[in-house]
Amino acid sequence: MQQHRQVEAGKKQPVNSKSSIAHFKVCTRHGTRLSGTDQPNLDVTPCPEIITAQHRANRLLRRYTPQQLVLAHEVAVAAIPPWPASRAVIPHR
Image (cartoon, rainbow, N blue to C red; front, side, top):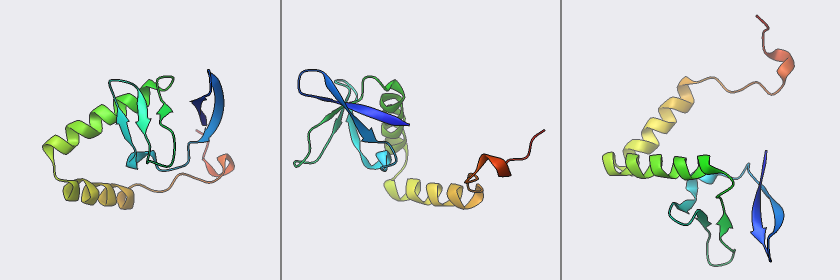
């Protein structure tokens, strides 16, 4: 899956979606991913699920400490088996 960022007068350029978007901050009002000082902000309005995820992350951070959330993520990752690398190994029902 590739997302696109707005570049110069509406031209779009692919962006690698494999990067850890969980560590990005998104302005939910303007629909932009706030980048560091060395990169431009990205328009995420074509992907409303990113804005929804940021709303959920903000809600979690109001309710729990960052340490609690990191621990919960580590426990979940350990409890859930990894996704198969190939569709061929997924059993058919």
